[in-house]
Length: 270
Image (tube, rainbow, N blue to C red):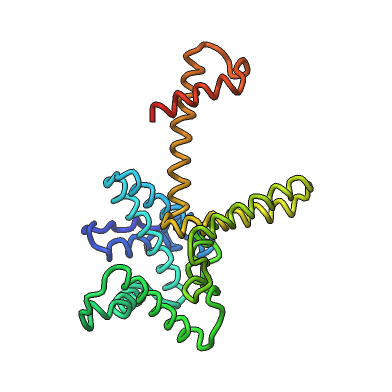
């Protein structure tokens, strides 16, 4: 049996977290679960923790945010530790890369002050990223090729559209997006009448893509907007649940009109 690992004394030091992860990954006395993980098995946790960070921000719960940021940092350390075990890179390389990138992409801060505003900086940031992509690929590939496939679909749709818009492939006015929305709605309705499952799926996807474009033109994050609506639905449906419970009746005794009356009451409360 292996001897217990020595816990770190300075719990505020990043080196302590790095050592904790190395101890957990040590085949001799480490944690069996941590030892058997690899990049693929750990990757979903990073996505989950990023969402939990976002949730804490939206709830403005900064105690939770502090904890969730720590959980997200752990995922970074986890991946860096596995990479170091394979001789690929280590945590210091990760830090060096992001430091260099931030300096490189902010010449107006670290090289010269040109008085640019946030909009101008966003454009400059994208221009620098485009040049970096060309240098990295050493050949011109599709403008869309490096947008991560595993992003949430609506988020990826917005990123695809933003990238295309940078070279002028975009509606000049939001009115055209609304026109496209109506067109896609009609095509979805036609597909529904034709009862072709694959066509219905395609047309529904087209409609969602237009909705992402509409969100982009309205400068709305579609994921955040839908999360907000989800929470609103939960709150209102909970009101309906409580109303049914207070009535002493079962759900199946209510018609949709009766439940809708409770829903309208719930809307008045929020």
